[in-house]
Each structure stands twice: as structure tokens, then as C-alpha cells.
Length: 294
Image (tube, rainbow, N blue to C red; front, side, top):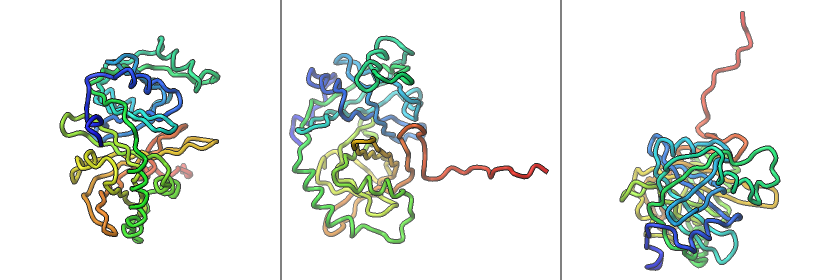
């Protein structure tokens, strides 16, 4: 990473505001749940309204909206959808929310919702910017290096007797080398969530994730044993957008095929796609259906 990429400013640059205003791109938000774990959500209705303020809209009710009402600290990530890829990271604090108003109208009149007659953005969440990076280039060569290293690591790290925590769709989603993947953890310096691109993230089996330190090494080395992390993988095809969140615990590093890798043990798998978001692993315990009333 260049010296420029390590800089954090107190507000968004003009270029950063322009990147946040793109309608087609990747916009992620990391919040902190009541346990102190990070949680990643994709919120497309999300922009820097001014250099000091970010506003994002509520289209569906989910975990992130509840989290910010209890803990206002958030991390944000913005990346365009076409090469050359550019991105920025931000940290911000939730201030207040408003039902309706000009910002809800702004999001609802965008290309994604302007013809939607059933649902629109109902609430706007206003956030003060604590820090933002400059707009940076997402280098392709380190991503390619990660793809090559995974050829040596994934098979070596596989445990054939591992518990099948991750369903097959999620397993394939995380192992597609071209799907964008991200890691979020709490920055110990200030307590704010940080979102790191981690295209090299893989699932060698259905109980854990691994990643070589081929890209964003300086950030990934901030992970300490026992830290809770949230990971996010996404793919967009011509029909639908598929994404999945995995919550896990960083258990340290190990060499597989001579390559040093970080290891994340899977704790939870979270479906973040509508119409019903929520945990899919571990399975929720429910009472058996009552069929005999005698």
C-alpha cells in the first residue's frame, strides 16, 4: 500500500463524494452488534451528502438498523463496479434518523427505485464523518497473487472431517476467485469497524475461512487471536445479486503449502438477502408443531 493509501482525513474529499454518489457500485456498511461483533451489510442507498456527513436509507429492516441505535460507530466502504477499480474507506458516527424527507425522496427517485411502486426508502440515517481515506486504486496484481497462492493453500487446509457449517451455495460463493470478498473487524485504536477488501479469502472446507497475506497485509496483521470478524462475499449476474455474511473468530495463522494464512473459524452464517434476512447457521431451535390437542 502506498503512503497515500494510509492517510486518514477528517472528511470526504471531492473525489470521495463523487465516488459515494455512484448508483451502480458496491457500498458496504459495518456496524457493531450488542455482543460487540462487527456486522457487514450492503446498503446501496448511501452517499456522502457533504464532506462531513454521510446519509444512508432504510429500504428493508435488518440487523444494521438495529445495531446503530445501540452503538453509533460504523465503518463504510465504497467501490466502483468497473475497471480501473477505485475505493475508499470511512469511519462515521450515527447521529439521528428521519422518516421521509428530501433524502428519502432522493434515494427513491434514483434509477434503482424510480419505477418501484411497492416499496421505497422510508427512513434516512444521518452520520457524522470521523475519518475517510482518499480514493485509492484497487491494484489487480496483488489480487492475482492471491489467486495463485490459493492454489497451494486451499487443498492443504482442507479438513475432510470438518463440521458442515457453511451450506454449498455459500461454499461456492466464497471459493469463486472472481467474487469480491471483504473482512471487517473492530479497529483497536479507536473502536470503529474497519472494512478491508480480501479477494483472496477462501473456504477450504465448510467450517473455516483462510486468507494469505498477499493484499492489504498491513491492515490484516491488525487481527489478533480471538478477535471477532465479519466477512462478506457477493456476486452479481444478469438475474440477481447474491451475497452472504459469515461471522467468525480469528484463530491465528498457519502455513499451508508453505504459505502463511490467517484462519477464521466460522461461528455464524447470516443471510443478508431479502425477503427474509437472518441467521441460517446455527439453526434456530423451534418448538415442534402441535398436532394433538387432547
